Length: 164
Image 1 (cartoon, rainbow, N blue to C red):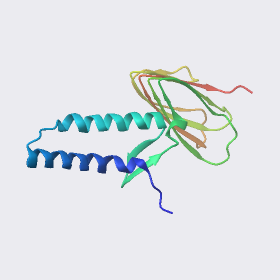
Image 2: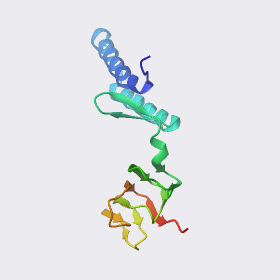
Image 3: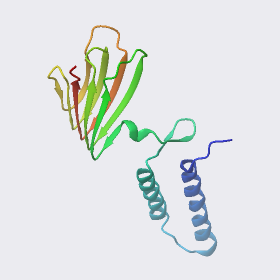
Image 4: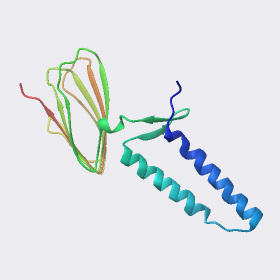
């Protein structure tokens, strides 16, 4: 059964609507504000995706990612707990946009956190605070088992190590 997604319908609908409007203008002389209609469709689409908790991305085709909210803090506060024992290598991506997040890691598990911060703050257990720029935090000299990449935009991230 093929995967069907409403995310893949937005561009065809916009292009078909645009074509119909151009035909009406050429054949009947009816002037319809094309840019306003396309912009309205786009705003409706973005609002619907925010409310429904899905987002569309372009790789080779459109696809929906319903799990994007799991590792994202937007306009709110979220706690990410990665302190469970992990023997398998893991890679995580966290996005904090206009929000704040608390990231809990286990000091016994080798962890690397690559943080990129823009107009925000990222606080690490070694008392390093980044407001703009990039920083890589590691809690061990061993090869990391957990590799976390964070993007903080107009938000704050606080990383703490879980005490046993």
